[in-house]
Length: 294
Image (cartoon, rainbow, N blue to C red; front, side, top):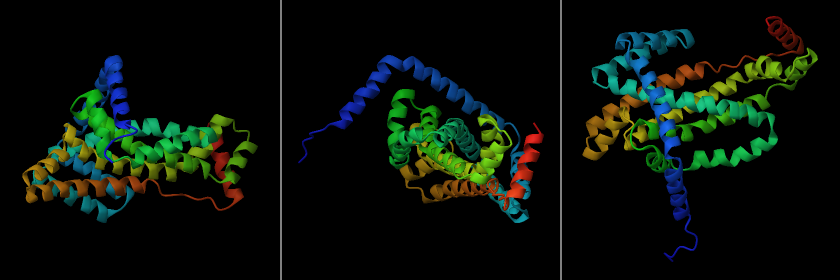
């Protein structure tokens, strides 16, 4: 029963080894770009004092959600500072933002392409299913082999894990744009580019922002797991608590992760509030105003 008739694992190992033998220079270059990008974002987040960064998030909370959430945000970040996890939280935030931005830069154009082409949608659908259902830990193995240990393999693995929602929900949002609005745009003489940027993308924005929200949440969860390959941040403390069986450290670091996740989730979710047009006259008026601004 233990004899293998189809050894897929050895094939995968051969592919990875072939990539290492023939394209190590390309992977080194990609690693340097990703590392520099991530370090720049982390430096930007580390530059202001803690109180200023907290104030920015509180202001976002007041603007997008309300006073109660802003108070919750302030209390959460003050609690993180007082427990000594502020620096690790900022590192985690930087890693999450880096992976999310890369995921969106790749995922949103791919989602637009899938919305415009049924053939592309059919091809990428099983790929996205595979990317989402594969256990997150598995991505760390080839990433570590191709890029070494550190933040780069963690970010690469996070991008692979977190990108599918951006692709899916961008494609879904564009496909679900009211046909009445699209027809109104065509009747106004919109070309394909104008129809996409002036009509379809603005009306698909609630779905796209839902994809951004899900991408951020998946990136945050994966960044914690990526500590196993040396990505850093709060994941290091979570991993250390497991290795030492330190319940207190695990609770403190886990609480910081949860609070950060709630804040990011609520703020990004607030940007996806749909604004529906209820009649053809309102659609035409809105579209006419948009096109006149060109």
